[in-house]
Amino acid sequence: MTPQPTAPASGAADLAAGLRPLFAERAGRVDTAGDFPADNLDALRASGLMGLLVPTGYGGGGGGVGDLAEAARIMAGGCLSTAMIWAMHCQQVDALVRHATPELRDELLPRVARGEVYIASVTTEAGKGGRLTSAEAALEHTGATLALHRDAPVVTGGEHADGYLVTMREAPDAPDSRVSLVYADRDLTKTEVYGSWNALGMRGTRSVGMRLSANVPVRNVVGGPGAFRAVATDSMIAVGHIAWAACWLGAAQSAFGQVVSLLRSPNRPRSVDPRSDLTTERLGRTRMDLELVGAYLHQVTAEVARHREQGLSIDTPPVQIHLNTLKVTAAELTYAAVDRLVQLCGLSVGYSKDSAVPLERHLRDLRSAALNYSNDRLLTATGSLALLDRSVRLA
Ligand SMILES: Cc1cc2nc3c(=O)[nH]c(=O)nc-3n(C[C@H](O)[C@H](O)[C@H](O)COP(=O)(O)OP(=O)(O)OC[C@H]3O[C@@H](n4cnc5c(N)ncnc54)[C@H](O)[C@@H]3O)c2cc1C
Image 1 (cartoon, rainbow, N blue to C red):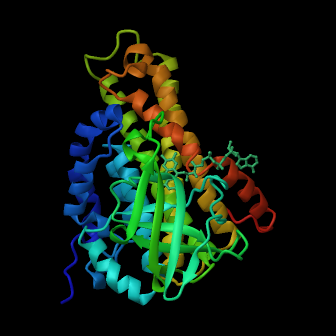
Image 2: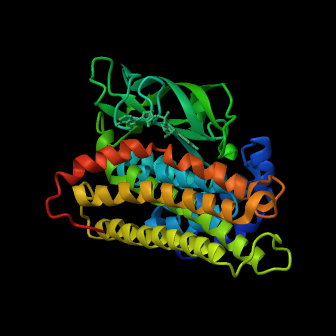
């Protein structure tokens, strides 16, 4: 029997808006304790949003990158950690939808659509740091299965995941640029958590270190042996940059909205005069930063959606430059926006953990944006790509 769609794409924004107050209520506790927001994940599973990007034929929502960006932005206004957990899961789902073998798709996607499978990402490796398209640990071919032993120093929600998408060197004799992406189901994987996630911000993501060991069927290689680069370019990078930018924008937008409400209320700090030029200039600049990120996010999301609809490759210098620019710009401007709000509000509202507006949490959370994935790596890649695009085709 074909499962019924659980979360039609057209309703994704409404579902996210329905969950947002619940996420907002729990965000402070999740941050203080550094706890994974398990209740929020349960709510996401029940909502059908875990299968937003799964095609309707598999029982999913059949959503696209626009639906993903909008739902992520809304959710992040409640809890950035939860929104990023969901956004990164959707990134993995998109790679499976577009590049998994038919057998793996048939087996896994209906389960994802039903909210049964939360998928974590394993790309970072101790020796290579954040370099996405290289790998050290190698798959070992053992007849019909592939043996996987992987040290994974940063796995968001790794303790709670039901499956992992893991980058591995194709074989022991393959160069580190021959990377395979492999799906490992939690039930068939031995996992050992090491270290803790006691980070400055994004504390609710519980991005712990793990060791994973599994024997996976050959059909679980996503995109073909050694072909991860194509999966990353077509899906993971594009969807990641769009969804992360949307999350960061949602958090900064929510902070800005709360500050505006506070300044218009009788509870505003006595030291802040909303009519002073200093205050209005800061508000103006912050609003401008959010406008720029929002407009660029909209533009680049539409560009990727258009390419997908028309069956065109996004592996071109201009589109990849636009995607990198989106990630770096969103990381820089949303952090700068919240930093400016801290200055505007002053010590008690801007810097205190007990403030009615959680600016200090947003500031700590958004500091991670430039590191996840390193802005430096993207800027140097963008510079190299720029040399290949003599037409200078801007977004
Ligand atoms: C909240 C959060 C969640 C995460 N979740 C996951 C997850 O689920 N799974 C996962 O696999 N990973 C995850 N990561 C890791 C992430 O994907 C990156 O791998 C990681 O943030 C990069 O860390 P890094 O800055 O130490 O490493 P690198 O990117 O290796 O950078 C190391 C240093 O090299 C510098 N550098 C980079 N490029 C150049 C250059 N061209 N020239 C000179 N210096 C350069 C950087 O500035 C930096 O100082 C997460 C990270 C965060 C913050």
